[in-house]
Structures are given as structure tokens and as C-alpha cells.
Image 1 (cartoon, rainbow, N blue to C red):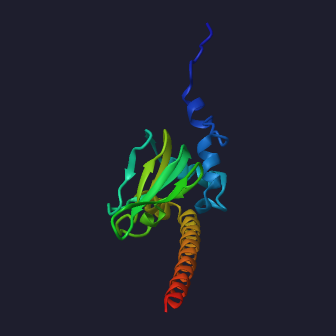
Image 2: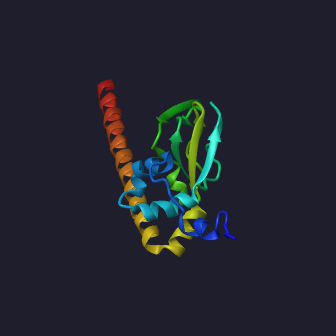
Length: 180
């Protein structure tokens, strides 16, 4: 009598195949925060991601709410808005697949500086501060890579903002001198 075993447990333990061509991996590889990260490290990050689906024109987060992490656009698009000095809504950006936003919330508890809305049916990957903390504790080398890239991204954005302020100041000075 032949003893046939259906679905042995070893099959599940040792044959776990990771699809590195999935849209999640392809999207993560585009995110500057994860530059220089190996496929095995990307798998550790992927396990921490929170996939969220939004309908068109759905609120993701509102300006002045507490931030808890960042979002990566896997599919769809996101509109980032804020209020100007007169309280009118201003569009800052439209972000598409592979772009990310809200990353400042990974390192600070300050309120959100803008609101985010889906513009169409959208899938986002959430990466939150507790997830980053756990990666830092369990995989310090990976955590330091992410933090280093995060500091580069934040530094680059701060530099761009400083350049914008300088440009606006010079335009303001030019218009003030023309009025004299």
C-alpha cells in the first residue's frame, strides 16, 4: 500500500516564492527612500506595508491632523492641497505611481502641513513610524539605510524650499523697488 501525503508541511516552509516582479516591488524600487536596498531588505519592508484602497476624491489625510507616516502611490494619483493665507485651498502637487508623500511624519510628531486626496481609484502603501521603529530595532543596518535616505530626501526638499523663498524674496524686492 502506497502512502501518499497531500500538501506536506515542508512544502509551505521551504517553498515560499516571493514575486519580485509584483507591482509592490517595482514601485518600492522607484522610491528614493529605498535606494541601495537589496531585494531581501525590500521584502522586510514589504511585510511592514499597509495597503489601502481609495475611491476617487476620497480624503487620505487632512491638513493639521497628526501625522503617523508616509504613503507611496502604487496605482492611481493623489492631489496634495493646503490653505493659503486667505484660507483658500491651493493645489501643491499631483503625485502619480511610484511617488510618495507624508514622509516627514516618520521623524516628527508635528501636524500635517497639507491635505491629501485621491484623484481616481487609488492604491497606496502606508509605511508608518512604528514600522520604521521596529525595522530599526530588529534590522539596524536596514533602518540606518532608510534613515540616511530619508535625511537626503528631506534635505533636498528643504534646499528646494530655500531656493523658492530666495526667489520669492528677490521678486518681492524687485516689485517694491519698482513701486518707489
